[in-house]
Image (cartoon, rainbow, N blue to C red; front, side, top):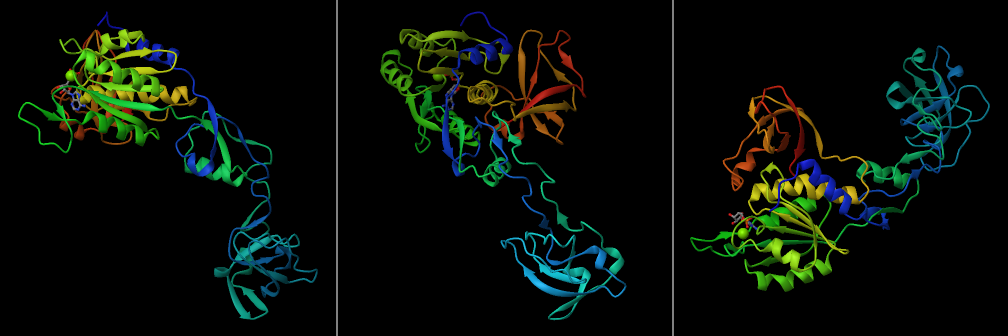
Length: 401
Ligand code: AMP
Ligand code: MG
């Protein structure tokens, strides 16, 4: 490991060296979570006609007299072209929600405010209560035609899909999702289904990474486990790097005698951008690239892997996909004093008490996998000469995926 760089410098180096991902056309029902790469424009005004907001009767407000009676001349269901009630005073239409309000009416009265007298007639219960425009969603009142509704760089959720659908987009230009390999390393690790010997533990980082990726709308193309053996991991790692745009390695990157990963990456000709960040947990994290692939080497301790994944990997992938604004972070205040470091950034697990107040949940160490269950996410605690932040201080919060 070289001299440590700051968290900001690490994020900058990743940003600079992670190639932008190209755009592809994607069917609308496969766009959830992806980053939009075009502008979505309204092809028609919103709403495209005077829309009835209620089931009831469309009348002319000026026809209301003290009796409040009307003659029903037409039925207007949703989906019918525009109709007319005819010129005679006190004609009306029986109308349904979503139907086109007849051009010769100007007020919709819901059934609840009326009494049906017979097949052809209805009466307003309170004639004075109704006036022009009631219960009509006016033509073009929400948005005009040809207006930009969604900008490139937006992450697509259900609301964005609905807007694209209503504007007639059956597919959208979105960023490609990179092919990702998740690779764990370590001779002490066994399969989840295996009964570990006393000196062994089950692998959990790889499935943890894969789960966070899925929750971020990314996915793992390939996964592998490598032994702590330089020669044995060179060939499989070389193939994983050739086959994928992103390789996420966990473990084998610290100072241990068997932490061979950095050496193997060097041998495979990858360029090291950094190895070692002034942060806790996750100090030994590194970042390497060649023309085809970016390799994130995440330290193996579960909390280190999880934090580095959330802090660097996922945000930088979304940035490479063209996301305009990161959506997973916000500001919170803490409700207890916390110890800081003057030389390291701390990523401190916290439990949320409310949307904006968090209680620190310090862990014993970064191998403390179960204790993370007490937290909802982590805050970024910058280095501080006084080594304390008092209760009420605010920090950037990231939620666990
Ligand atoms: P390393 O970074 O390889 O020195 O690993 C640090 C610690 O994390 C060791 O205690 C490992 O056993 C543990 N560890 C590494 N990889 C995994 C994994 N895939 N699942 C669970 N624990 C792991
Ligand atoms: Mg190891």
